[in-house]
Each structure stands twice: as structure tokens, then as C-alpha cells.
Length: 187
Image (cartoon, rainbow, N blue to C red; front, side):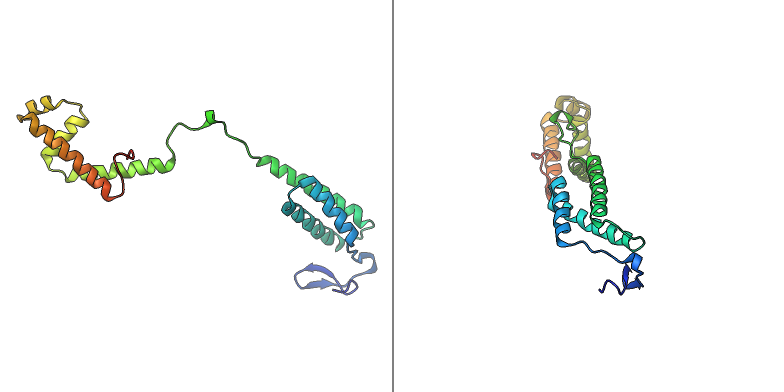
């Protein structure tokens, strides 16, 4: 674009330039000095390139509305302000190392979801069990009754009660295995 033809205002938008608003473009020496200044304070070249780019954008935007006597001084002032903003944002989102003592003792969310799915599967398997098997299993595992106590209350042999408990476990394992869960994995 010819410097005398117009000043960039937006995409495809130009306005005539008066001599007082003639745009001064930074030269190669200024570009190198500005890059060295910014990169020396950031260290990360991608962020430094972004700061330099934003510096030029703000310089050209400012030159579109006002005359700039010292382009170099304005470039460095803009860059300093952008670096301050960058460091302020970086401090807010600073990385903090977690100490092992700070680790939550509760299970991770994915484990909680897996356990809930396993419980739902087991509840469905319990509902599908024959009523006597379910009754014996619940008395043994939930109520904590002994095999002899269950046999006495239901007027059954202890061997029959043990068989129902074993078969109930087999039904639960089968229901979980169909969905990819195993009792050994803790679910």
C-alpha cells in the first residue's frame, strides 16, 4: 500500500492521509531491537512474537488518529505495557505444584461412576434372582446372619443355604462380567 494513498482503518477501509497523519513504518533495525527487547523479557518466543505483533497493531492504530513524533519510543512504551499485562495474566494462572498431602482421599470421579454402574447392575441381577435365593443372600450379606441362623429361620439345611449364597454370587459375577466388570477389579 502506498503510504500517501491512505491509512489502514479496517479491512478494505481507507481514508485520505493528511501530511500530519503520515504513517511511519518501523524499519528493520527497530524490529530487531523490539524483538530482542520482548524476547529477553519473556523467554518464550511464541508469546514474544505475539507481543511484538500486538505492539505493531497498536502502533498503526494509534498512528491512524494522531501524529507520532518518535515511533521507536512509542513502540517500546507499548511493548512495556503489553509485557506488564502478559506477566499479570501469567501470575494469575501460575502453575502450582501439588503436595501429596493435598491429594484427595476420595476415589476419582470415573471410579465413582464405575462403582455406581456396578451397583445398578447388581441391583438388577438381585431383582432377577429367584426370591428364595435373593432372600438368603440378603440375610447373609446385608443382615450379617450366619448360615446356621438363616437355615434355622427358614427351616432349611445349612448346605442348602450355602448353595443359595454361592449361586447368588455366581449370578452377580455373571451380570457384572457381561458388562465388563470383575469382582477382582473391585467393582
